[in-house]
Length: 360
Picture 1: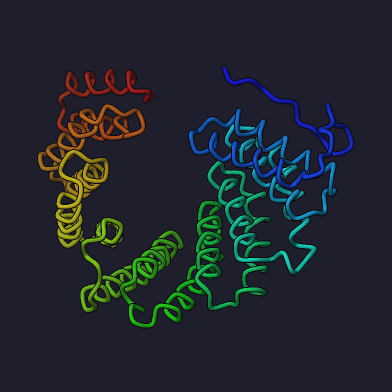
Picture 2: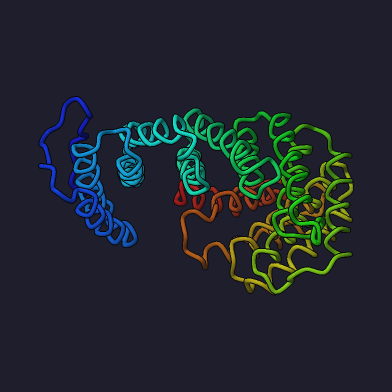
């Protein structure tokens, strides 16, 4: 059990670290020790060192000092990793107040720190806090670095992801489109096939799909595929190949919704080919694509082919032995096929297995 630390508010300190003649140097050593602990995922120890650094600097220079603010930022990171979001927010706000009120402190590094705070809240689905810090980071990035800057584009895309998760697909679409225009400006030689560009184009298509604009989504996905097929790119990049596989799978999903199962299955096969070359057969992405193929076959009424794909997917997921691999999803799909085929005994076996894997 990790030891819990008291949160020391500025007006109510549990103890006072005596100022030294060289407080900055003492705090630097404490921060280095904190960084080493943090890199080892020893967040309790990291928090203790960063908190000591913060108190030392604050007692010597006050909260408005930039070094104090950076120590507050790192203290907040440790608290966030310890699952103490509200306490982390206090220190994050100290950092943000310090840099946002002094334009000289709006360096690229500090803007990226604001972005990382937003990302930390996004990951734990604290969307209101995430949005506040994203907006602060975006306004600062455009003001200091310029609109056509890589950092501005990345923040815009992350804002798009946030609004997408909240179901605000129109807002997400605007963020992605603005991010895309910046990326195509800053990557002129690879305006159609840079990995960042492909991810953004994929995000635009996904937003169109979620908005019900299936025809537009399909055309955009087709345009994306044609773009990277025409241009030269680093196809040896693992990230690139995963993006391409995802685009093919999205195309398959949209085609299926448009009532075109045969080309949808072809797109799934293209996705599988890329994934198997990159990851081998025993991989969660391969399993997900096989499950998607099973759904398409089932919708066509090809229960045997559907069952075959579902069972292939299930075999991979069980082999991976990871509770996050959605075994229950595939078991449910298999059970539905058995029910449709009138094989109630096999369906019952699947439902019992599903319950063991956390299904209902």
